[in-house]
Amino acid sequence: MRQSFSIGALVVLLSGSAMLPGLAESSRAASLNSQPDTSTAIDLAIREVDGSVEPSQPEHQLVPLPVAPVPDAAPRVMAVKTGQASWYGPGFYGGRTANGERLQPGTLTAAHPHLPFGTRVRVTNLWNGRSAVVRINDRGPYHGGRVIDLAHGAADAIGLISSGIANVKLEVLENR
Image (cartoon, rainbow, N blue to C red; front, side, top):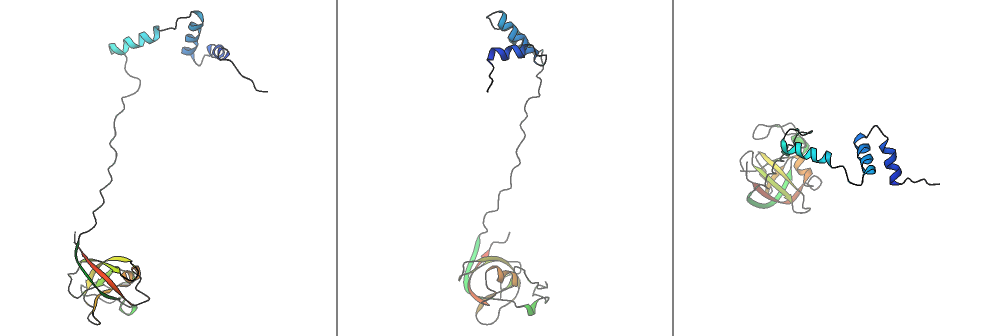
């Protein structure tokens, strides 16, 4: 069976509680006379205007939110060319490139006949739409009319490993 208490019974229970003296006093005062006890509210209002009462909590201070860095805009394309690309096979691993670096498997580097070392180029495989940004660190290719020779990582990224060659679009990116 469900038991319910009336609000009056709840007030009587709370009025005897030592845990809530303010509520007990105000409920006793409310039961003694029909006028609400406003002396506490008036006294508090006078002290707040007078300035004699310090606020119990410090004022809320605004803390600046951290600002996320603005992402770099897409690099500007300086030139576009299409042609065939090939890739360096495992026989070249560990060898030196034209700028003196060692060729490592998995790198996103490439050889180009005349672009300066360090130039970044977006290479897009026109057969599957996959692309990768590579850094020029070697010279070549010098045969077959190819426009770029990719290191293993770049060739893998654009899906060139199994075919060996592919039609590509080169986009020379602005160096920053």
